[in-house]
Image (cartoon, rainbow, N blue to C red; front, top):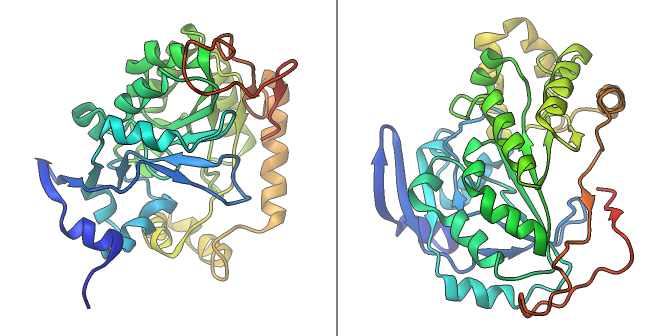
Length: 331
């Protein structure tokens, strides 16, 4: 059967570099900016500069995206990294379709600051263009301390857009983090980067997602994390329970069997019939997270603020859409 769509583009991708067991490939891209119509997420547009992610997180839900390219071996997700072709002029034209005040999320499927970004700087180029505009609601999600490299650009963005940067930190236990997220920067390095962003006036917080039964979901673990992120200057904190797509279930259950065999039967039972944990578990961990937020005075979500330069007509063609005083987005 002839390949079509993204599978055909992937098959035609040209090699860029090879590093240890990782191949970087140039992926022809129809669009950097993608519309999102899902009612389950708080944004209308997404940007993922890379397909695949080197961090190799055992629970990663995004592994399935490589299946669209006919790459069905789970490890291909962290071994074949596709670098999207980027042209500034084309990206500017794409942005013309985005209305002022729209929510644009960077890093919804793969980390925009994974190691490939050191080499190819696609994320940085995107931010440099956005910094010439105004009036959007921007969010960035990452596990990487590399984001601190772009603190000056992000500080500029925060003055003309409503911006927040969310760090994923699932645990402060280095050994557990290395098992769950084998090639991601250490948790303390992520919080050091968060502190740097806060020193530049950038709104930043932490999401401890996913919470994994018996591993990082205890109140003691969450309190230690809450105290650590509070001391780093985080302004908000949230978490969601683990969910396992079939592609990630295979990887995660293999880890549980090898390193946490006493939990294997529990995980097999919890995920036998569904990808998501039941509401009883979600309610239990939600109460723990809420208790930690209260103790360390952390907000549940980033603030939807009015950027100081949003009304400056010299910054871009975007028209500001805010009025009145800043309000919480409630997301």
